[in-house]
Image 1: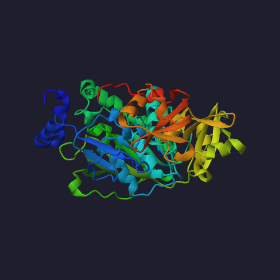
Image 2: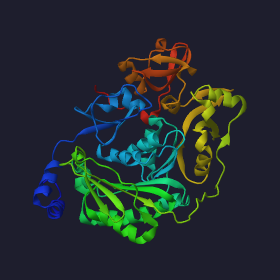
Image 3: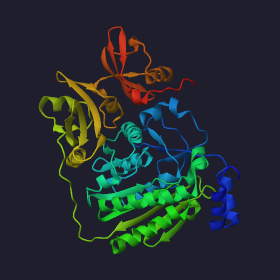
Image 4: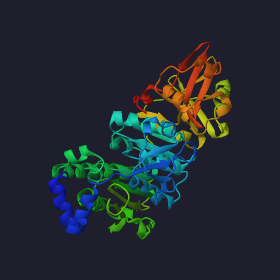
Length: 455
């Protein structure tokens, strides 16, 4: 226990009792379980493992592999996600959110965003916001790899998002916190913990909750979560928030949790709460809560656009873009600067409103640039689950060759057809390469390049 902050140990033993507090602290010094979540739209090269009980796509792995050197990981066929945080999917599974507009207010690095993307489907839309620019870039990379084409990544203060008043059917706030639940896997979280940091986090969470609430439509669902244990950032934050909004908040549908899952279920006013303790659940520490906004007569407000950046693509250009996707009849295409993007038609106008009002990082699927009517594909198009793979020559590499490709090293030209090629390995689409005579241009994106060299 000496490696845990002393004040933290004192508090959990006081709040939970000596026996439970000691059990928690011992668990926080134990082994970290490895868990992933499968992408149901990309059933290729997915590791086998034991099911995570509260998420049908979740799996525990007996051994942590080198994910960096795994084709499935690099192609977005699964996401490495802590098991407890996958529980938000169970909350929303009970409510059937397919087709809704969902805001993930504090979204990086993208575990929950990609989960929500799967749940809302092609008819729905996820707005994934991250205030820190470099974290937003990581979020965008993970959204590209997941490849469902129904996410808008933004880089805004919560108060800017709140201009879309009463606009979202679901708002999720995975609040920045003191990170007590990550002590087992994150030495930095232990080193940075302090009681003053807990208080600072609680104050910041209050600000985010207030802005997020403005975005939620009447009758909409709010999910609040943290990866910490203390009540100030969890039940205390919700209690204070509920006092501020008064009668505007009400209970959501009851979420069932079998006792054998080990989750500690509770109530804080109208909020149904769920606590994950590593000595009770096979997970890190996690807290989640759910409630619903009452129907109080608010109407959705869409801000006027600040600028026009999306231009519809039609005619022969649309025909060229259409041949690259499996369901062109369900899609719209737009040009932003010099790059063409694809969007599902059901939410195209919503994306335009968002892109022209907020600081967008990425949206839909980047398809590439048109040169004399022919598409030079963007790497993101290879990751798109709706890609039509026979639109271009396809070259399947063995793993060693695929690693060369993903390291941006030279790949043998004779392995490729002349012209543009889709690069695959183990059924996973990894990107594009273009053969020109005796040489081959490696078009794998720099932002995803593998730097690790050892096998």
